[in-house]
Length: 468
Image 1 (cartoon, rainbow, N blue to C red):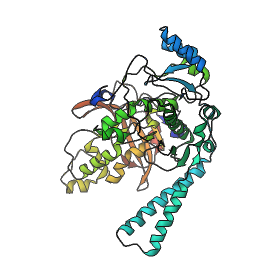
Image 2: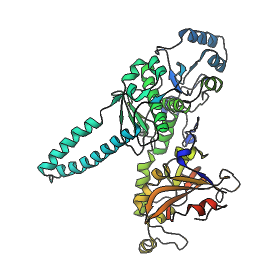
Image 3: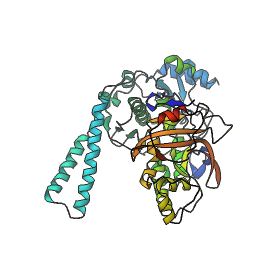
Image 4: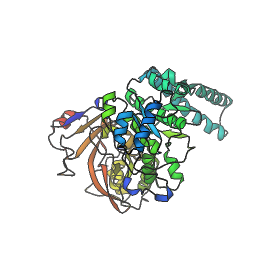
């Protein structure tokens, strides 16, 4: 029997794997300072330091004495509550379990949707102004819209967004961090130290927004304490790394590991925090230079690269047999047991999903053993976004069984795109092996993508993976 998983009922896990091509990045690649030693930490929960008003200095002194005596770091942590981070600075956990949102999520969404509409209209009017085709009324509308958007982007104070007494007692200055809401296709949240502002994407669930805001708050604490900071994907790309390498470096940046782990442990109680060792034993951490002002909670830098390759496939100029990577496995799939691997499609399936049989024949690219679905290349470009937010995920109970890599590992994501009054589904092969850059890698493969009558009973009652 199939297991039906509604995405709104998926549990929020307390730990996650964020690796992405980790093995392709060496610790000292391109002279990146990795500062690995036996005291390195990858901290979870909100992490405070010496500048916190609630820092227990006497406990810290004891921790330092125990360290001098050669006492095990885990024993020190359990006894004093203090431990060192990757940057060798002492930290302690701040309990985030009592954090509550004070704002109206539906109101925030409505405002963000209105702002998005204004941005689209503003772009249309700007193009007319640039091309000197705008009327006087349109010019006035453009400038009025600009003022309205400034008003919509005005932030409210963090203390007006969340109730978190322990955090604000430790760092009263965090009350005045500005928070604003804006829809994003790639980010749940962003923190900018230049302006001391957090952006939240209100289209996500309240739990996801809580996870994002805790992540971004940790970046603010890193700035206050001068802890190892986070980074963003552009930072690593500007240093000359490829998209895949930049993704790995971003996920392995000390400050990003810390901020993600802060979110992961946010619901632990005191006993769990004491008994469950923080993830402090990794050796693949990298450091970004300070001064990088924008840290995002969730990014998909592969989207632009994916779209470019889709265009090349459409124009028949993609001269590689590599799979085409569209991003990291979305959290909604990780929550049901997927490994955090690249999500990819083959060149063949990207083309067959997009075009009709008649077009394939007309372009001389027809294969009689292939099904053509005619969804269009724009629909293909949205596959990652769609499977990241599906209506439903249907999986076989044994989908993680390794005995048959293909036939029993099919997962079906039912997405909300409707074409010709039919729902679109995305069968996914779990832990598939394929070639990328002349290396054999593990991926989660979107094996096809097509519209189908919404006959869910047939899918749910089927005891075997349907041959799609």
